Length: 241
Length: 241
DNA sequence: ACCTGAACACCGTTCAAGT
DNA sequence: ACCTGAACACCGTTCAAGT
Image 1 (spheres, rainbow over the protein chains, first blue to last red):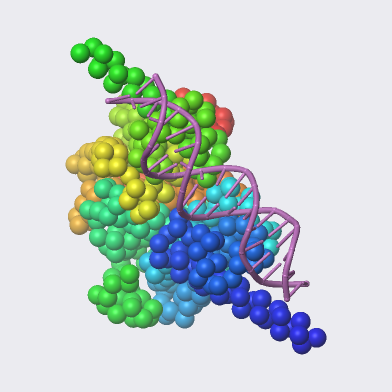
Image 2 (image 1 turned 60 degrees about the vertical axis):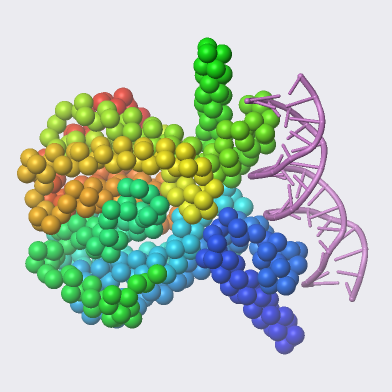
């Protein structure tokens, strides 16, 4: 029935609209002031209708996490087109991660806080499955780049290191650095460091520790970083925020 | 006047009591369900009295952050008594951090989420100053251990690296790994890794990357880790959680 | 001077009444 | 079948009344 198809299309459009506005509100003024009352008012739907789309406020939050992961994934996928050796490729992935976190700081934090138990509990099974799907797809990109590098013999770390361990080291350093720098200026202990320099250095330290060739001392990764600026369309010296 | 002194002592005792219960409630069932109504009920004071101690709910949260930092600091200070080379000392610091995060997962997350803008805005100047004080003291311990190692020539990283940069690399890896593992079991991408192994490995990678001697391959840090279990009073094989 | 609890505004959630 | 908005319970915050 074409009427059913139309109904479903309208439902999906409304879902998109609700998430668009919710995301706007989140990025404008944080999760604290994202209320369903205001969302209803700004979208001109009733609160009851919103509950037709999301079974709780936490369910909405998880839906926003999914959006965040989609953005991250789309940036990740562009990395495959960046030319260079395997370490430049993984650097490109970290660049993409950093870019995503800077362009969407609120969404970035969402993904972490969305893991709190009370959030997960109140999220629908469907939304949770959606989240897991995108988490897996994001992880798969990271794993693939690591696997390729291992196959090529670019990573000289001990044999015992599996793809999982190496991927996790990458993820932890990238996430930790980004999350702490995000809070920069608010925490007294961070304000003393330039964000870009610290990020590049931390990733370099971690990759050197993994013995991922070529090491820092044997390659000009500052040049790679410049090329990444151009590749991702961020002009040199331009602030991302 | 002794009556004034007594009054002030009583005020401080009540402050401690309020924070004790608030901490309990936070660790029991998360920040979401920490309401001032319940806090008032459980402490048998009125809500008005609570507002006499904390100018907002966010102010209370920051007070809990201060508690978290105090716990972290007291564990950090014990590290000075742990015998070993400079890399074993910094490993001890990471052990302490990990221990604190596992024993007080809710408080650990508090410290991060307490940096959100809407929290800081609603926190009293006094409480914020308190937070900064303890942040500085915690940072100072880390910096001191790094500085000592640099003076001893144990860190062979490029000259350009300052204490701040090296300390930050340590902090970022420790925080990132701990925060991600904290969420383990909930995020699909982490469940595949053993928490303790991943933490030790990530710290090892980062320290190797800094060229902090002796490197992993030249020292048995698993043995050091065992000694740290005993030093901090955690029996081998015993779960910290 | 300090404490109390009623009162208020706001918010998440539900559901009977409408179309 | 879907949408609405009134109704409810709960929560953070304020403040007049009490001691």
